[in-house]
Length: 429
Image (cartoon, rainbow, N blue to C red):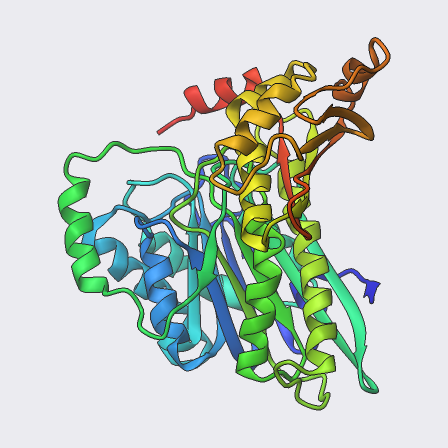
């Protein structure tokens, strides 16, 4: 695998664009389009939040046949909890792109990110679509990446090239996310959520519903690989579970989280079959790219001053390993201790203990950095000041050796700063 430039337009046959259509008061890019010159195999994973934005529901419908050719996304407005009209607007977004590109509406996926509860100014989007399409180019990935940013301060774009047989294959991706980040995404089911009943419920709820800050994580992936639908879904699911689903910034799961992947087959490699050697190679590259993007999100977290890796080893099973890693990484007390450079490993132990995983406190070991601080149910004496110095670093590793099995997992998080509280207590709604 070789890292390359180009983001979502690095693979053959993909174009992108991003521009300002009038949603953001800042007048920064707020509308993005990713397009393949050929119809693609497509798959998506979506938030498991029971309150889902209309774009999540619409995409589940559009991906029933496993095909798509374009993705349109807006920032500055989540189009969530906006009643029946919100569902109509998501479909209008897809339809406007479909008409402009000569596609069927179902071939266009939709994404939105921003503030919950505000009606989407969809006519601004419709008006801008012709210009958005006209500006599609091989150099448009960065414009698209900027257009999906909300509270992000850095652009998140990656791409890689690798070999499948004798053919060069590429994967590219753009992403966003800096707050309201605690993803738990799953593959879209074969039966999408019922839009009419959801819309009716959202309409009733909206009448007395407060408008709340919303950030979301989005990731759009392109590849020129020829790959079977089942292999694509498996690679997407596995890569997501080991990357995006293992990060947390503030413990709040969004209503709009999604990862969409388009595979147009233009690399002309032998089709990648599920469970094959080539599928393993493709999946490994996808996971590497996802992990890079996931870590970029944590490093760009709202108000964060530290990047933290929480590693769990020797858990009874894989589920326990993930559970402990996510519980510790999302603990408010642990995150406050990180911000205060206070090596309070007792908070780490307590979080592990309440996680619901199998824990034997007499077998558990805890390391801060490489320094052992807990063993045999009690503290380990260490040189004065060494733990303080570890927690003052900008990058910190916390390791829990549960000593009850052979499974491991790693989560990524950040500290919880006063700036985060200030940002989110003063966030304009």
